[in-house]
Amino acid sequence: MVREIAPRGNGTWDVMTNKGAIHAEHLVNAAGLWAREVGEMMNVYLPLHPMEHQYIITDEVPEIYDRAHEHPHVMDPAGESYLRQEGRGLCIGFYEQNCRLWAVDGTPFTFGQELLADDFDKIDKSIEFAYKRFPVLERAGVKAVIHGPFTFAPDGNPLIGPIPSQQGLWSACGVMAGFSQGGGVGLMLAQWMIEGECERDVTAMDVARFGDWISPGYTRPKVIENYQKRFSVAYPNEELPAARPHRTTPMYDIFDGMGAVWGAQFGLEVVNYFAEGNEPRYETPSFRRSNAFAATAREVKAVREAAGINEVHNFGKYRVTGPKARDWLDRLMAGRVPQVGRVSLTPMLSPKGKLVGDFTISCLGETEFQLTASYGSQAYHMRWFLQHQEDDVSIYNISDKLTGFQIAGPRAREVLQACTRSDVSDICFLDVRPLTVGMTDCVVQRVSYTGDLGYEIYCDPMAQRELWATLWDAGQPKGMRLFGMRAMMSLGLDKFFGSWLSEFGPDYTAAETGLDRFISFKKNSDFIGRSAAEHERARPPTRQLVAFEVDALDADVQAYEPVWIDGNVQGFCTSGGYSHFAGKSIAMALIPRKKVAEGLAVEIEILGDIRPARLITIPLFDADGAQMRG
Image 1 (cartoon, helix red, strand yellow):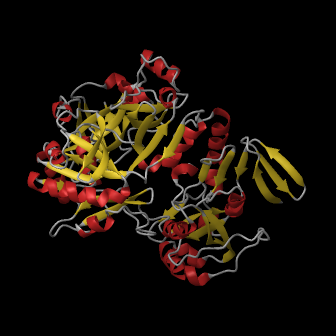
Image 2 (tube, rainbow, N blue to C red):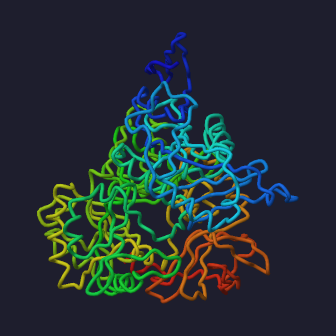
Image 3 (cartoon, rainbow, N blue to C red):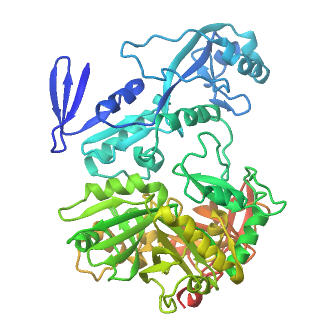
């Protein structure tokens, strides 16, 4: 039995057992029901919790054993159950609404393989529904009742991979479906430990998808929610309510009072859109265009015609400092590291050339840089930074220590100028500089995901409300309005901008997605992934990211819809949506490079409906970039 786990200080570990000590270079927490307790020994909190689960095995059923083939596995969303063949009978299990946590204060070390007492009261309604759905069950006798605990993470997926900030520590727990998930988990962990990366994107199972902010108090209600919705239909715009609001910025109450309809990213409340007048304060989950469609269109119109404002709190932000900070970034990032006062865009690659991140680098001083990337990838990116950290380089995650606003639109410069005594007319595209806005000292950079003239204005969270009042008051005469993430994604579509874990992610390379245009092959640095990127430069990959205009009806592309070319599926969509500016449905997709041509006619399947589409290469807004750069 393991009694204590202690670090040696050199990245290795001593495991003290009742039979002596074991020295380990790598330590994997695969303790199942006891993973929480083992994590505590490592001074690591793993967000998982055991749930009680009950299933029934029937006696022999003639309709089963007389079949020539094994009965197919069945999942019934309405009945919250699964059913499969078990020998000559059936096994049916339930994800009942009246579910229960198990071992809230810790799994007893004395617990073995014993079962929990039968509890039919919590599944009686589920059984009643199952008898109506599968009448044969009512006629079959009950051979056995299995009632025991198994573990869930807040989103129901396993917790796999290297534990952030802990060299040599690995997680392989939260595997609630052992037989179906175990093989993939084992393969993924073996590749990660031996080769340093996995053959495909495993973000959905990565232990780093949760940050330091997560706690047992958050985990428990989210685990219950996930259990209850295990077999429910998941919608692309669905916002789950458990454990919310949890993390908020100083703007939460102000925006809430202005009609904010909230979403959540990495535990943080983020505005999806602002409801005005009779517009709905709740977005109905749907695979089709939702009841937020009109509000999103209104916000897009405001940005394109005048100016819009939203928060920049949901960006991952990092401060890199030190005398060797520039050299370190030059090796870590594939793109150009900017000079003082400038900003650059760059991919970050794995040794095999896969995308690890896409970043904005802002040079605040010769030895001080700010990095901006996906908010939900903080732990993932910090783990990568620390794995490659060098002497004389300091790296800080300042994602929640720096906030502020984005203003964008043709009148954004006028709004900013009205808030400062400094001349902002010479702030060029991809410039960054300190600026006093109202009473607040800020860092302002000329860049915007909307593809319009825009600025990101960063400040201390303690000053955010004052900064808001300054910008909002100055913006009203200029027609400035609020906008949320729904509008922001629509605005980005106008320029065919991709996003992290949609167009860009560990499954793809820079050359496949077009990010290779930001790689600096001229720089004198052997950056991570350089050889792989140069190989692709000489021999372009077989697929390429492109944009399509889709003749859609009332539903737009979400992701992974098949692309039919010449009567065969030859590609798939990475994301899509509706361009409210152009009044067109747009899809981003990976297709064979040899097929790429302006106007290529394809078909894209959306919700079972085959829709015609054509490839487009000219952005829908500001095609030559004159407004964005002007």
